[in-house]
Length: 422
Image 1 (tube, rainbow, N blue to C red):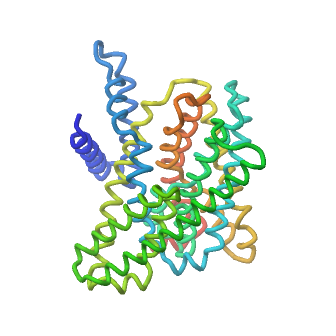
Image 2 (image 1 turned 180 degrees about the horizontal axis):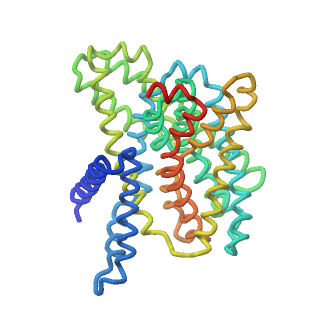
Image 3 (image 1 turned 45 degrees about the horizontal axis):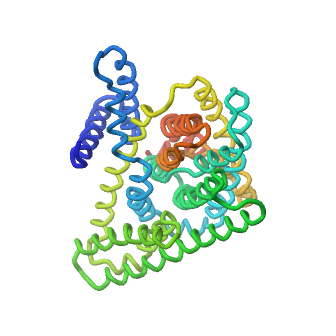
């Protein structure tokens, strides 16, 4: 199947699932696409033994193998999705909540890696499938970051207070870059290609500072250049094209020089969302720009969640792996709670809604395509790769389907005004 044919098939399936959802379940579109893909995948697995001479599973796996989800997301779709999410962030609220965002994106992510690694190391031993601790650290880095693809879409649907929305969005947008950096460091340590001992700590710290801070500064610079370019023209289509160049060019340049592409493109998107940048746009361009990026976001979200649903076909059928995955779900929730409460609790001590905010932040810690892509990017020779993939996939699907669908109910429980305004 050609690349165009494959793209057409995926878009058609996503559209079909979306229409069927609108007529029946009426779930959020991305979740409906994921559920539809899961249903088709399970149907293929169930029907495969009863159709002699044809391997439906093998055909599906062949098609999935041509997509290369890790490269597709991490090197292509991520630049668009992060940029689109950053454009919609309220910069004033984000700046006012900068301490909470920084604490969650940095301290919270690191804490989640450590807690997940230690707990899952014990879980794997408990189910009789021991996994080396170094690879449990890699698993922690895979599952620690929340996914902006899932989180930002959820915020739009629920209508949380602006300050809480800013914390949610800021954390999920920035901790992707932190998570990818930690994943690379953990993978290098686990495979023996990285340094060990005190030298490893210094190397990881230096790499993190260069990638994260360098990416942030690069994004701010390219955002300023794009603002200057937009101010030099009054053609709407050209201004939209400049935004596309900003998203893709910043991401590609950051990766080329060894900086964090995710952090750089988020900074670029935030820079284009400033009041100064908006004033540089010609009359009416801001609405066109947001409409364009909303469409890109919807298409890529649907395709990504569709692929996540089909990736169930790649999971090995090991009972012990699924037992570990079942235990990983409450573990991930508990770790999320600790990684939220411990970094930001001192900042919320005097806030009357502190308990509700922390509960909503905990339950809203959805994982998504980033985690799945990092897990699929594990080397083929990874010890217990099947167990790590299964745990990651089950946790991701649980957070998207169960937490995503119940998030509005949880939010209304602690913010009753939402029920009156919707």
